[in-house]
Image (cartoon, rainbow, N blue to C red; front, side, top):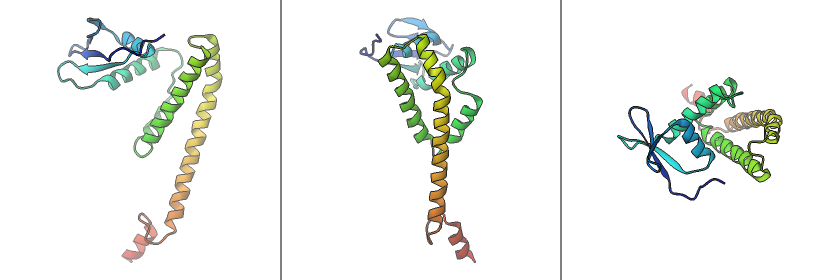
Length: 171
């Protein structure tokens, strides 16, 4: 069972790229950081000189290594392109959706005791295409709703962004 009750572990990153766990007074690796995540041990990674929070960038580095070295990647090129396209007006919505979806999978995994078993792997293999299709349909419906809303509000005179009204004013 993970130890999530302890205090926040402070990990310092030095200019030589080494990570130092102040809790255990030892140098650690990205593999060790990944284990902290798996064990749900709260931690923060900071630059030893500036105190800048580096946690996100180190976690992204761990994801990048896992994506390139561990079997089938989670993020296909098309998925990454789609995520990049969502930065801007959609990023908050996508962030919440991904967080809730991943938490739901973790909750199912914990509830059914399927951690590190063939059953969980088989379950996820069948669900991944379904979830991907669901996300594609959701994004398509959202796009259509947005476009329809834009068309609808474009019919009203004086509505900001209505190019027909702006063109009439300049004629």
